[in-house]
View 1 (cartoon, rainbow, N blue to C red):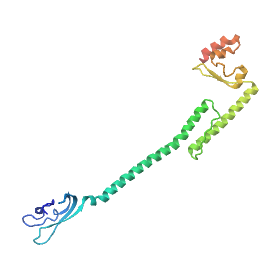
View 2 (cartoon, one colour):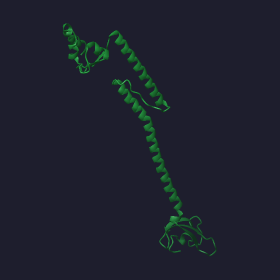
View 3 (cartoon, helix red, strand yellow):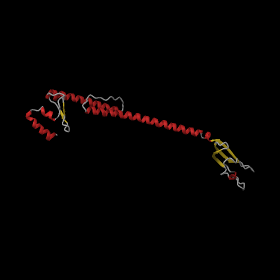
View 4 (cartoon, helix red, strand yellow):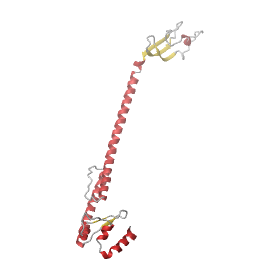
Length: 212
């Protein structure tokens, strides 16, 4: 018993009285075989007997369940974190991809591609938004068709001038009226060149003062 971390004098002082609260408990220490153990000790309350009862258990064995539970908890937390990251990425992709397609379609429409259509099959808010966008494109296409037919019958056309660059675009009907094709340089000088010479200078002054 002298090799163990227990002191008999703590339990049995000189007056032979017993200290029940200081002579029982647990300790971690190295046993006689230099193994890490957990010892549970308690004094024996017998007449003329100064013994301490010690029960030892290998530390690895006693903590094996707790260690295994710790590893299991860490594994579950890691797997759960990975699943959350993958699920978040998947949901984010499902949300952002349709929105990106809508943005690309909007850019295509503004550049003049009125035949663009969004293919979206999801039955949610994004799908409803895509359907509304496609319906808008159909109505715009019908409007452009009717406008072109009306201009063709009335022998009218339309044009759009970019005041920052000086270039302009026009409908096919107006190109037919002017007798120009896609190779014609559609800038201010080109516009003035197709006007009657008598009105060219007046047109240049008007464009310079009121438009440019």
